[in-house]
Length: 325
Image (tube, rainbow, N blue to C red; front, top):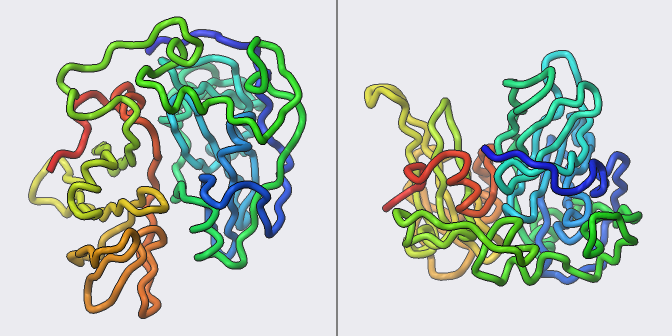
């Protein structure tokens, strides 16, 4: 793991006191991180997270960190509690490989965002708990969460708003990573125009910036690439096999929809596409692949997962940790 300082600490300001409203002023197809805890459902626009990367919030009584690394396309929501401590996270200005390194303000330990693991400091070796969350569009969020709320623009200055290392006033109408998301290269060097990284020859069937949903269960890690799910009529079932094949397996169903890639615990159903971009049929009813909600009122449980680019999953788990049909 290559850890280096690339900008000053807090040059990208985390959000500590987010505010929420019922309406969003951005485009309907803007992506948001959707989080539900109990009866509290909130959306965090990625358009805003480009400039802040971390939101420290409390949702449904649970202290959470909503995190986003633009270089890795990595969206993960964590419980901020570690032991008897509740941590508040900021942006360290460091990258681990090309992933955001967070730091907690209580101990100044440093944490790799895509893994939720402390890599340096007093809490080194500790891990944060991943919470079930998804990346979807604002339009899909409002369709399925009429009582949901969206974070307002935090404002201020950010290093991401300018070309240098110093913070500049934020204009949320601008998208600082638009060119990066469209280019072939990946990582900080590609973003800054100073050169990219080499991709694994063993993974030539997966683009390094392919969107992946990363699943982990009792030491088993499986990254499911979006194109693989799309090629299977929009749905695959992943058995998170433990070391012994005789033990129980945790079955996860992954849907590719027009509102993102989503993973839910599978109670044992076989899902089939009905031909549109959101609906799948199983156990005598239709299910929305973006929300896990069935027409008859039943609901699948969303599993804790991360959404990230393939190269970041490879960095964390190796080339053998991808789902293959």
